[in-house]
Length: 619
Image: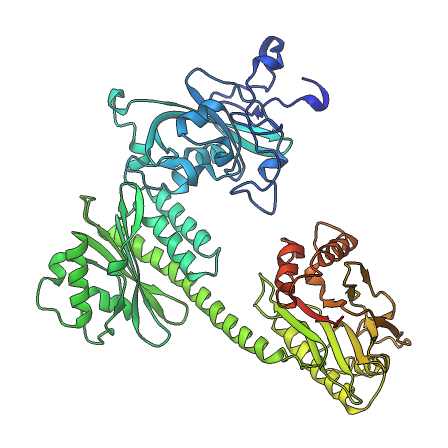
């Protein structure tokens, strides 16, 4: 079809014999002769793309499934078809593929096809290097296999033959077309499953090590590292995986015991426990591994004699409970110290571990150790940062006639501490100071700069009774003289009751988002007057100041830009959304207001920290 209406499928690049296969249908095949798969509409037809909304398993940043055209894949008599992009995410699927794998299109689109579908004959995961789709990408050639397995939606296995052809999804965007149909393995001559279950080649081992490094270093969460470690090695190398970790206090914890059962990874919590201390003189494999000595092969016979320690007794019980006849036990070493030990065991797999496989396990454990060591270092830094933040943020004063609340949320991608802060404290003469500020950055340096500015501000404000603009002007001069230069935005407001009982707010704004005032009837407006330059520029200009009488029952919100800013939209859109959302919360309890604003207003793609100070006047 021509023009914008052309939604035909991806163009094949070339086949194994080098023939080019274009994307046009032969003899002007009419559009209505094709069955749509991945079409847009009011709802997903068989193979259709879900209309809008998030896509399960979609990737960010970069293209998601909704970025691709709604291709029409033909329906074949007995063959399923799907298309993946260059990251292996499914971007189109036909109805026959849905039926064969027992999954709806909405459960397939946007998901990683290899992780979701590809299995060995026992239902275990397969290293990505052994995936034929990846091999087709790397070679740029059409590949075919007479026997492979997909996992259906109900957990059963589909034995199938499949063909993978590299294709072009859009100019400069590569993908692959997968065509598969069900087969009976018993009717096939020859060992067609060798590609899924044969011995690992040297290339496979190198690929597994590369995947181990990439996967384990992609997260700083200890539990996720362990989960991915088990997924990489079970059932590929063993059907049992045991991880023992040394604690910071010097103890040992059996953190993970996992068994591959009926195609699933099953945790055996009854075997996960605190362990006896590591004996210094023991020559048993686990003791040596936990001391960081060396990797070793082991079996039931290794622990059959008289145990030399309580740790050896626990290992003896492990072999009895699991039925392992062969195991590789390797130290998990970090950069500075031993982190733990990895035990891979075989019970249902008949072959015993070889010396060559032991070296592979040792190399995998070394990579896991670096990832775990890094995650632990991050966790220690996070705890220090959180402790520091708790001490930096103040306790709010009790002001008769006012209700006040505040909150701070760290950056989700930084070191859990940042330069955003709030403050409130009494001023000479009975007034109350309200402060919201943001030092550029969201790391420990920004927090240190914030602490200095916050302390100087309190000193200047509490020293003598001055208007806000004069205090901030003196603070700005001091900021430019700091040893570590910083730049910051802030609002300093002075709140005091008048003779009539009405409250007056007087403020100056140093380059900060304007305070939001929401009256008791839901009318909202920003206090945009009194705005001047941010702190730390070195420029000397008169600082403006503004004042307003606050209506009874109104709510005043001071906030930092992490609540409203998004890389994908202009600032005014964030301000409009905040005003509209806050107006709808006017009757909500003050204590819940911060959480409601964070969940309803803060953009999902914002990686800044957020501080808020909220007060409500009596009616």
